[in-house]
Image 1: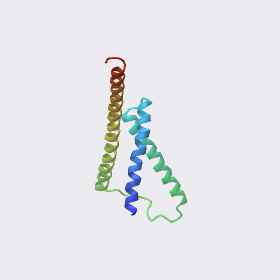
Image 2: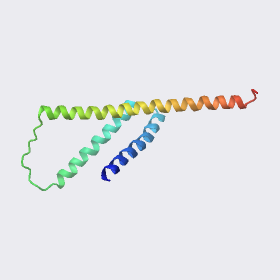
Image 3: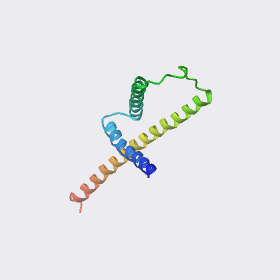
Image 4: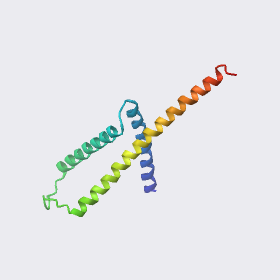
Length: 120
């Protein structure tokens, strides 16, 4: 049951996110602007979380040096790249879909108005 709720929360997030992306496109932003602002906002939130948890952590540190191996660094880069590409491709698809729907509505309104306007 817990995993079903996780999937539901993820689906709702994508649905809600498309609304914000649509508003951003209407305001004149492009895919790079939207992805960049999302990443900046995420970095600010994560670093805020790091600073809050570091101040509240009262346990002594075993080691102040944190060593990252080359394999771990490459794994993190691969995961980050796939996440970034997912966002960019999703936002580009939304831009295409919103443009297609807009063009379809304009043409259908024109055709319906033209047909109903006296060309009988």
